[in-house]
Length: 470
Image 1 (cartoon, rainbow, N blue to C red):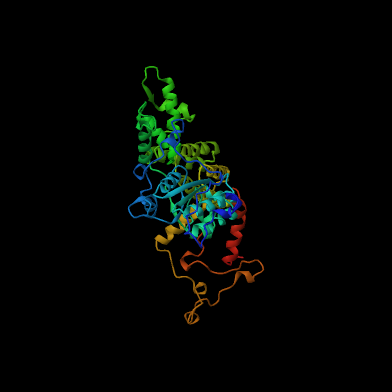
Image 2 (image 1 turned 90 degrees about the vertical axis):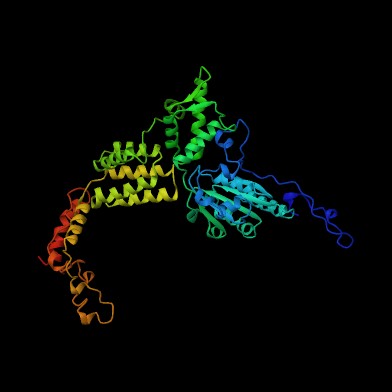
């Protein structure tokens, strides 16, 4: 027996020749640095007290909890597959893990990747192996599994494959990039979505009235409720934390026993000004439009203001990243080609890291685009080319440019006479590329700003060489 559980005692083994084997006596559980996810008592935070105690109390994630779905079967105790729960903070990953642990005959162990090491993982696995001899299955919940090293994740493989533990791993990062492939192949990857406004509103009302929460000791105005929903950004924990802070303020201010959470109470409690921003209404379009026009107008400070308004209001960061990528080409283009690279990199940070850290990458891209030299030449060039195509100016491709890689192509005259530019010392030579009716048409007209200043001097020379004018 491992020293982890104490010295081996030969006298405890049955004599196989004279008596039937007895089940091993339960041994003391090892000391493990467990992460607590319990609801706690009355002094626990509101978000912990309101953690759903049953599947009926879970809001959102209906795509994963419909009858017969793998996650619902796990929660109900009929599933046996390990899972990786992937989604933004406050969407119910820890709650679902706790509900899975509550299924019949399962013991629950929780580790945080921030504090647990390989030794802790192996201790839980050894404990789970011993529990199996008594018919008990162990659910191992690992929060922030993306912070585990490859070695730590590899330590789980055999136990997951042999179902010594039922692994429930939670991560806010794309598991394809943060979880080792062998562990992914042994688990179901289930993506959780941010909670919708109606889900958050229902959670707030339940917390306000439920005996585990505020037990009806406060009232809340519609404006305050809407503001809490906006600030939550789909995060249940953030919503309940803000509600608790607001309730404490309202109760402290109440003089007649009548505590009311209004908009001013919420603002003062969480130290953030109200952001009047409706993601589905006029304010959404107004703020987004102002953001775009500030970028175009090179007002970096105004652009950062509108970016901050969208972030604080819980705007989908993917929407912001898409706008930045569009602006990089539409408003800057070749005046600073690196702007598009910065915008694309910011979008990748949004996808792979998530909020709130990704807001810095969005700010960096905003500053780059706002301060870069501006040019609408790319937009104008494409627009003119598309207009000509729609007007029917799309003559035959010149024969020497056509595909000549199939049998019979040369008999059709394809690819005959094509001149390879790289064979010329300057890498450019006289040759017709445009259809006959578009010879001499200029679409792209670079400005004299940024990198396009150099292009505006070089492009006329290129056109003269290609068109055989010199």
